[in-house]
Length: 367
Image: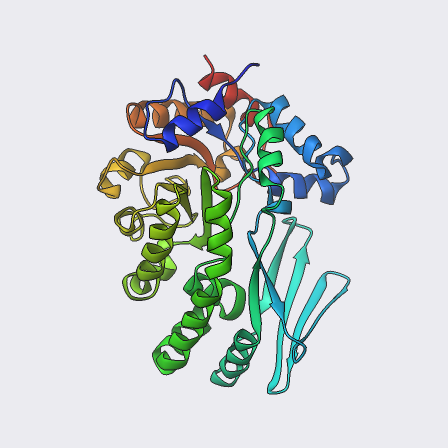
């Protein structure tokens, strides 16, 4: 099946009218399921093999996390970082002269994923240790040196390799360090120290942002893993200013930006559009999300931003059948037709999902 997804995708980013529907799907979680049950093709671990899988399914290659992050943390000699895995449990330690932070995570074979069972920052004392860590680390650009060559490789498969900035500071605190509950109490009890941590994180992004602007990819992702249930109340004060500062630098360099909103939609979608994002990605409507697909554009409040998503990952798995999926996709395309959108799985094809649905959706949009 011949596709022209990349050309239409780049047209969308340029504000032009595409010649057809662009169809994207994050297959990494489904692949994890195949690796867990022993049925994965070893070629999928290679970049070309991953691209060949997308070609066979008639979907645009985009999501690839082996070379995703554009920044990496480097600590000075006063910090000792140690990671150890025993069975399903992984312990990550950051040892400093002022104390140690400990994170624990567990691999769950039933769901083919890893979950954090103990966040490293849980108390005000932990926050002091985190501040020491941040004061003794820097962020270095990563995965950008050969980006142009990789773009050429991916273009041969009608795709574009994704790039992700470091998570915005509040999102990093929420998902990488503290968790939502502890972060909420820390914001209420220790606002000055939280503010200091956020400021340190944003200052450390400068060399990464500079390198991304120099590389000038067509699109960069804000992998903030947002959900309206969690961060709507914090957005205006803690996230919007950072987002706007980042976006101003990227847009000045001609780089478009998408933000990952993979949870509930209603609270954050209009705020993200107002902040200036070019695309809001992983939009999850009902039956998995909180908003009907018919209401998402009106909720966005503007036609400027690309709506990206619309196909809930849960619909690839029982009890949903192909007829349910077909009707949903037809309705989504009909409702979003004439507007700027990318049809995409929101958020991922699950391990128990029917991968054949991906190919059948590709056949639908190409006819």
